[in-house]
Length: 448
Image 1 (cartoon, rainbow, N blue to C red):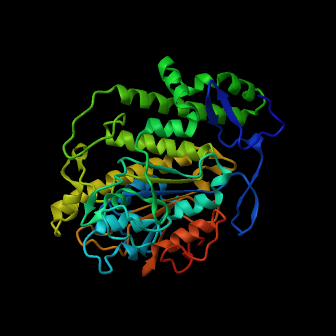
Image 2 (cartoon, rainbow, N blue to C red):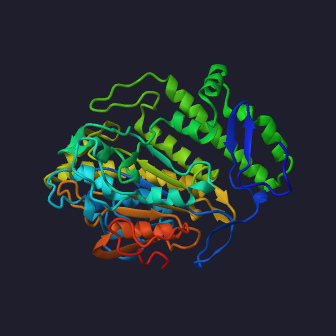
Image 3 (cartoon, rainbow, N blue to C red):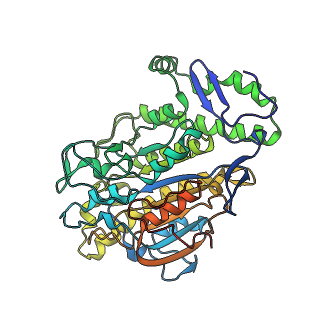
């Protein structure tokens, strides 16, 4: 492999069928990306978008701040983000109207996830005639996906169920799928970290992967010679960044291997996919790490991550909650049940905090990887007991290349479409469309 004086952004290290993309390095020079002034210009990195979803709403009493403006003391659930108060915004008042029944009766959980990124009313069916709408991530992927190795990445801790009746006559597709390439083409998510890793960095045939597994070597071992040649042409900062990147990949590989060797732990009411860590938090964090690497290497700039399928009844015994999540969400205003819901919400918030921390720890250009990201977090349900879809629990982390002023609680007029937020995020990756789903215009106020 030979190198020019300036490295290509698409440089890939190769060896024995393995291919591994590189993080942004100073030797690659500036690249065109969305600028804070609204013009494309020389920037150190592109903007990325990620969407994280949690089911069954939240205990909104312990979520919503009592004040507007600069973030001060955080409510109980959001206190998990204390160390990152300056890195995210709390957005109150947004609504997923198409998650409401509009005459279709029950099925709020199925509609909540299907409408979250689409703003479209899913057709009530448990057959093959499913229909929703194009999701914001896939609209973005269709416009900028050709700039990266993968147009988008879809991951989640639960497998996607592509058939069956899961919620009051709605197909299981709706309550387990967030990404929709078209109105009739849902994209299943991948829960297995090993398969996600191979998709991101393997790039080889099944035979090559089998060969790698047989000799039990790391991808790093196969690209060692290529990386050694590259390192000789890099400056001190780039060599340090490359070493940190390789260390991160090695750590993930080792954790996946350890998880595969551990005996399976039987958990009631939870079906874990094969070859997936049996520890839920470790599973979440492995997927978070892979998401960070996918952005760091510019393998993709668009990702979705469903922490648990909508309507999930997973128990959380490891934090002292033995009841199922969905059962507890129908709390009937019982204080003890609402307190347990808040603890589940706090657990999920810790995973979001972990992801923010990982993104912030990666230096990129004059800032961090988080500075060049927009990472939305939320649910298509608000209060799980009422099954309401207004005033949703929504957070947005990252500065989008300097286009978002963070560290604030922004309260919007109730019934403001959630899809207005997605439109504003699309603008920041230089994708402009007149509308998306039920949007009425780009969300104002994010720039300060």
